[in-house]
Amino acid sequence: MSTKPRKRSVTRTIRLDSELDHSMQEEARRLGFTLNTLYNQIAIKYMRADRLFAGEKAISIDPVILSSMLRCLGEGEVEGIGAEAGAVHPRDVILSGGSPINIDSVVNLMTRVLSVYGGWFSCVHNEEGGTHVFFIKHNLDPNWSRFLEAYVRSMFSSLLGMRVETKRTDSSVMVQVAKKDKLDAP
Image (cartoon, rainbow, N blue to C red; front, side):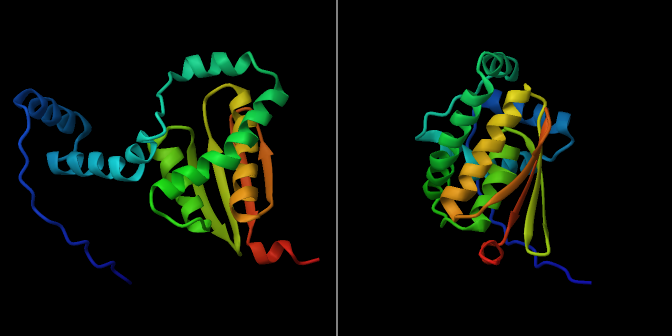
């Protein structure tokens, strides 16, 4: 049985507005967290996502509004937008976080930045025999699946030169990405 070494922590003293402190304590209680855990989660989210989108002027949009907008677009338009965004957006986000462009940074983008912090979808990732498998699930319009499929295909192709196999439903996209060296085999 292996045990990971415990991460070293530091103690910091911060000054908060009393109303904010009260609200934070209430939120921690509501979630069943300690106040320290809530502050850590907020700091992690800021470092791993929020600061990456700050220069981009990212906006939050209600899922109902996004679904309504997606229904107004044709399938080809949605796929074109996804492909265009997937060729540029991931590179900008990864590089703005100071990470190199590689499979690990793309996995982090998919499983943390866009999924956990961005709220684009939920994502389960496994690596099986040299193949990365992502299961992306959402509860938006079926056109969101089209957008995501095109975005992910374009992202892996433009960033890593990797081909992607996908299976799409109205509310999910299964993505399989083989190791780069496997793609060149006959």
